[in-house]
Amino acid sequence: MMYELLSLASRVSEIAARVAVAIRTSLPLTGGMRIRARTPIVAIATAAMALGPQASWAGGWTPELSVASIFTEGTTDYLVAYTTDGTVYASGCAADSWVVPFDTTARGQRAYATLLAAATSGKKVRFWYLDTCGLWGYHQAHSVRLVN
Image (cartoon, rainbow, N blue to C red; front, side, top):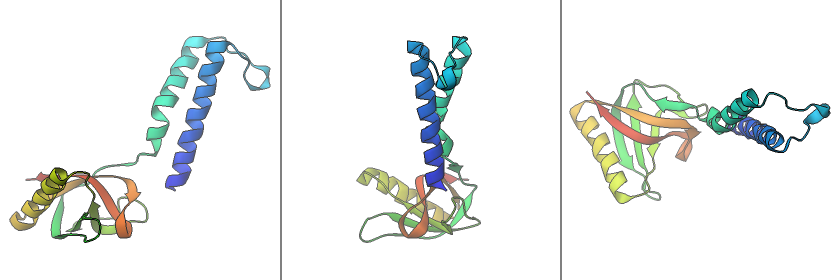
């Protein structure tokens, strides 16, 4: 499904780019049509180019989840968290299973501290995720937030 959405977003961006070129150069569009009213077309083309790729970015913050357990995966150093109270947020991912990749040690330490605080205190967390699965088909979280 993600591939189809990316493909659709790519096509929308491509069409919007062609319309923008036609506007700038006054070239005829397909079927011999010419653009007469520039302002509405420019607005539509700009919006399509700006929103096209983002149309496939489903996701957002999860509801509040309880952390059941956490560990670091040995070969990648991803943080892995198992939660309760959750569901499947991205198609094909395992429910209540999360991987948290990080690009710096400091970011990994902050994410680990957040998850550890939640697991030991009983507070809940929220994950920021996109519509993708990560390692082992788990949801891939890009941020984690401790909530009261």
